[in-house]
Image (cartoon, rainbow, N blue to C red; front, side, top):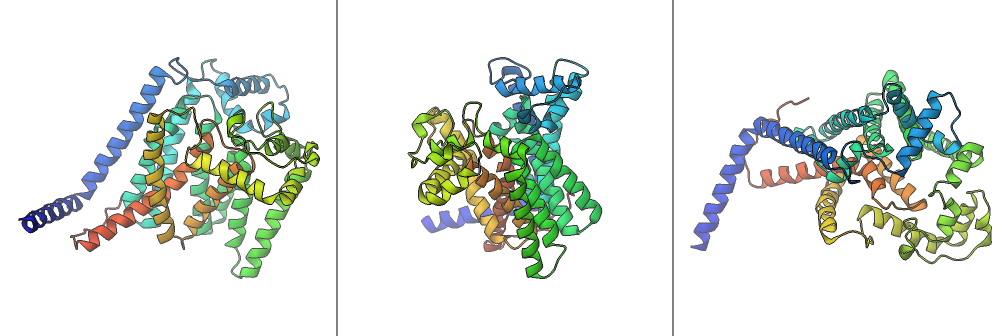
Length: 418
């Protein structure tokens, strides 16, 4: 009896999957419609309810700093060193401030840019697997994630930076694979714009330059020379140029300087309960942030521990006592399955240059968290989580193909959804 039931279930599942595979195009269209419906619902819901308790455009403390800086631009007044780090976003706000004090136009632009970024995610993932399903999954995980979508309604850099980071990754991959001079020019231009939106984007500049140079040369020693040269020049620039040196030194919150963040063992600023005890060292009281290098050399293990705690806190959303059990569960459902499939996708497609570019950009953002701090609202994770979702889409597609092959199901050619 049990054998008959097992045979019946296998036959039913095989028939059902076989039918589904025969109507892939219709299923893909329905998936896209569902994703867009979910995205629209989240945008409208956030607009009507508002995370801050008020409907409409959402503002936080930093929002007013960007608006004030935008008014300075309109009045031809100079920006201070901290405002200059967000020039790209401030220019966008200034443009809309010319027409109205209501910044609904900024929110509308952020929604449009998010949709454009979703299309870029689709194109990247499709180019890797040659399967539309992986692209739809990557775009869907981005557009349906409530923790990301909520930022589109804010006058904050988070939404715009995430969108530009995705688009920069897409153009960088296209430039490297096609080796087209005009594509490289547009790619570098977009990287520079992304770097102007918020300081996290600075790391994109050496990454982009390294990959440009690596694929202009065929010999390994030439590639290594260029990569080393770009990295060295970048480090020299941020160490000795007065503007970058001062900006990095003050990369913490308004009250915490970079060296103090390290000396205090800050995992998340302003959360003393999460601090890690660090060795005392008077040299860190110097105003130059490069003193932190010598501190790390003298105390490598405590610094490594601190970096790991920051990364784990941001990536896995742990050690956050202000989160409710429901919030933890939702975070778990959005993150951990995506991470597991991302590891599968990374392993299977690891030899592709696009995967190497994506992985490098993810790693430099993770490294930034390790040397600075994790964020109270997990905003830093949202910047590069869509890139992880590309790997997740590749991993899910790979697993589904393996299941289909193991069951010897009829597989029709993939429809071309370019």
